[in-house]
Image (cartoon, rainbow, N blue to C red):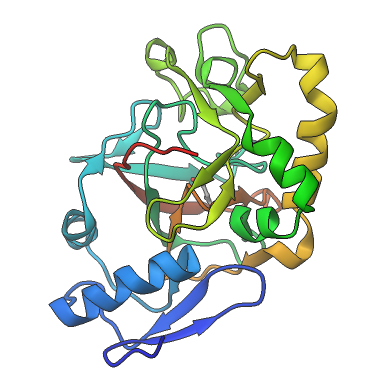
Amino acid sequence: MSYEHIQVAPNAGVGAFVDGVNLADVDEPSLAELRKAFADHSILFFRDQELTEQQHIGLAERWGDINVNRFFAHVEGYPQIAQVAKEPDQVNNIGGGWHTDHSYDQIPALGSMLYARQTPTRGGDTLFASTCAAYDALSDGLQETLQGLKAVHSSRHVFGAGVDRGDLSDRLGNTEAATQDAVHPVVITHPLSGRKSLYVNPAFTLHFEGWTAPESQALLSYLYQHIGRPEFCYRLQWAPGTLAFWDNRATWHWAINDYQGERRLMHRITLEGEPIAA
Ligand code: SIN
């Protein structure tokens, strides 16, 4: 597709960089093209954006309804914005392993707009993977086998009461909210693109429905290493002013924790999704 109002440069792997748009003030024709680019590329990256908290919220609200995060600390005065921060004296980071957000919800969140406010002098990149490209690359036989499966997802072992989160406790504190589990098809049809997507992830998927965890482990491990193959991935180097907008139903992400002793501060707004199905 060609675009008249924005410039879209697709990456190898997953996602596309978008140029020619000021996210603080997007006109309607550009917004329509952004929606199309988001469906086509699953992640949009923007450089050099200057957004106040209110402008970040305004952008998200024009896209859809905001999901107020029930686990993360929020930016003071802005409950809609989750604070994804790591201070110089903290060791653990938020999101430091492959995952897709909210798969433990009955209706998983659409995705997040993550905006970089402060980045380390080096490191702190985020890896993204395409679960649609990974599905497309499977054999017909394995695609057919997976079509019939569902998987159980949970947040309890990550956010629940009694879980040792080390120095993440202050940033991920609300154990009362970690009560939701969900069952989803292993292969979903993406609600925007119609593409098939592998909807399992190492952080929140427990096992296939009707299978034990040990029985599920071998096949899940195969799928996890397959989705993480480099040809389905893109590694984003952040700078202050970079915004990444990813689709949880088509991607995984991993915030790399390689900047000990430095501060990284991101503001994340998550958008409500819609029911997902095979
Ligand atoms: C997250 O998992 O939402 C955090 C991603 C990041 O900080 O890069």
